[in-house]
Image (tube, rainbow, N blue to C red):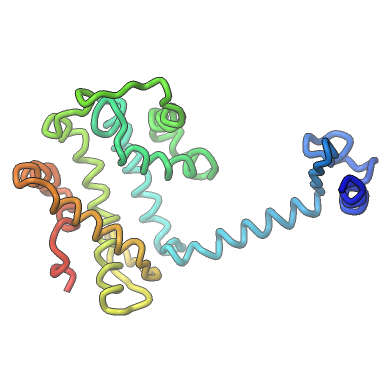
Length: 247
């Protein structure tokens, strides 16, 4: 095994006088029978492959030059709404995180942690959200209790702007996608925030809409009224209508 590893390192690894071997932290090393072979050529191929894969999928999710302005404006409004919300409380529904916090965190780790363009926007628009992403990465010291949930009526003001942004751009996409799937169409087009939006139909997004409605129906009549009051006027209430509304 070790002979094979040494042969691989000698054959495909960088030469001993290569800049990669001499000065870069990315080195070809053999340690306890395990070899890590990194060459400038392999790195370049990997970089190009990842770039091509990600860019080629942009049109699938509706990201293209004609929708770029809608995406950029929505992202900035979302960050502003998050900034205002986090100024009043540490998480979206109080002093403890909920499922929604972890859902937002998953997306924001990519937008703030990796992509340089969206990261720069976040640092400009909402440094508070940037800090929240870092803090939410490790909540092991938090000992949440039921009392840490905010009364939904008390937190309504902070949530309204966030919910309105969801209702403005996300809900129209969800409904259009569900209609297309129900009609057996492979793509759909609709108007979002004054612009035309077109993308492929995704069964998973339709499932998400179904799950949201199912959870809403499981609520008691009293709790449904409370949710209705919070959603009213945000555009999100359309997601809670029965499936017959998609016809």
